[in-house]
Image (cartoon, rainbow, N blue to C red):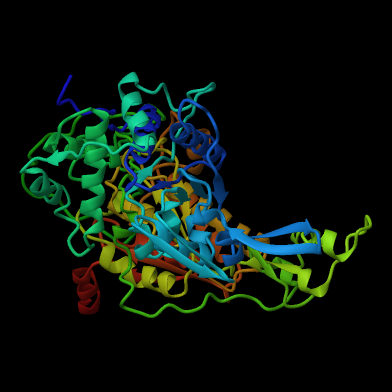
Length: 618
C-alpha cells in the first residue's frame, strides 16, 4: 500500500534478526551512499553466507558474481591499489601495473569484506576512511594514477568487546550497523528469508545506469531525524545523515514519492536506536528467597556469640507471604544483551583520567608463545617465520627467477608472523547482585576498573544472584577484553534476583584464576580478585552443581561452602594474586564480609562512604 514502510519491525525475538539483516543489505544495494554495513558479533560461520546474499543483490538477475576483496591484518598498500602484471612480449618479459581491487577497475559495484575490523591493518583502515561515503577517490601509488567514483559496498564484522580498539573516526564511516549475535540462517537459496517481490523493481532501478527520479523529503523529516538522535550530541553529523539515507532507501523500496517521518521511524527501528526500540519491561520484584523447610528469609546463620540481632520495632506494612521454592524453573525475565548500533558510546571508565600503558608481557621463553597471530609481515629475523606466506611470496616470481620446477626463496621473500601482545594482568569481579538493593556500587568499583583499563587487563565477570539468570541457582560468567565492553555496564546495572549462589560464584573464580595461572601461554604476572558481597549465600554448592534445590534445610551450608571455596583461592600464589572484598555494610550480620576476607587472605574495602565513616567512629 502506498505510504507504508517496508521491512520488518525489529523486536527482541531472535527470529527477526535475519529479516532485519536482509532489509539492511537491500538498503545498501539500493542506496549507494549506504556503502558500509557493520555487523557486531556476527558468527564467523555466517560471514560467507551474508556476503553471498549481498553479492546476489548487487549482481541482479544475470547472477554474475561481483568482484570481491577480503581485507585482513596482513593487508598492505600493494594489495589494495595496484596489481603487478607479468607478460611475455617480443623483447622478453614485460612488467606493468594494473589498478588494484579497491580502485575498481571493473565497472559496477564490488564487495569489500572485512572479517575483523578491530584487527584490520593500518593500510586497510586508511582505505576504509578514504573510500567509505566518498564522492570521488584519487590514488597515486607506485607510478599508478587513477581517479574514480567509489561504488564498492563494505561488509565488516566486529565484536562488541573489541569496539574500544577501533577509532570512532572509522566506525562513523559505516552508516548501517546491526548487532546480530544470534543470527540463524536457513538452508537453500534464501538463507535470510525470501526477498519481497515489491522490492525487486527498486533493485532493478538501482542496477540500471538510467538516472533515478529524486525523492523529496517531507518538511518534518529533518526535525524527526534529529529528535531520534537527540541523545547523540557531540558525535558529528554522520549519524543523522546515515539515518536520513536509510529512510530514503526504505522510501525507494516502498516506491513512495516522498520521504516521510514514518520512513525515519522505520530506519531507527531497523538499526534499533534506543529512542525507537521497544522498551524493556522488567518484571516486578520477586519476594526474597525463602527456605521451603524452615521459612527463614535468606537462609542466614544464627548470630555469632556476642552479637545480637537488631530488634525489630513497629508494625510491618505487609505480613510475610507464603514460602516460595527456588529452583530451575523459568526465569523471571530475559537475560538482556547489548543491542545498540553505537556500542562505542557505552560508558566505561573515563579514558581521560589516566594514560594507557603498554600491556606487560613476559620476555622469557620462545617467541612463538607471545600472543595470537593477527597477521604476516616481512621478516626481520629468522624467528617465528610463516612458511606458507613465504612460499607464496616466492611463488610470485617463480617464472622470472627459475624456469625449472624448483622454488627459489630469497631473503626478501621471508615473511614472519605478527602477534598481538598478550596481557599478563587480569581483573576478576564477583558481583553479588542481591547485596545492592540500597546502595550504588559504581563508586566503589571505579578504582579497580580504572586499574584494569590503564593496564589493559581483561576482565572476567562472575554474576551471582542476578535477575533473569538462566538458572538462579548458578552463577554466570563472561570475559571482556577491556573495561569498555558494554557487557560490563549491563552487569553493573542488572537488578537483584532471589537466590544467592555465592559459593558457586567463588568456585568459578577459583577455576578461572587457576586456569589463567597454569595454562596461560605467557603466564599471569598479576591478578586482582574483587568480591562485592554481603557474605550471605543461601544456595549450597551441591545445589548449584545439580541445578535444582534440595528438600532439606539450607542453614549455614551455603555460607560454609563459600568460605571453603575462598580458602581454596587463598592457597594460590600470594605474590601474584591480590584479593579484596567490598563490604556494603548491610545489617544484620555485618561480620560476614570480614570472615570471607579472612578466608581469602585478603583485605576489606568499605563500599559506602557512610559505612566507612561508621567504622572510623567505632
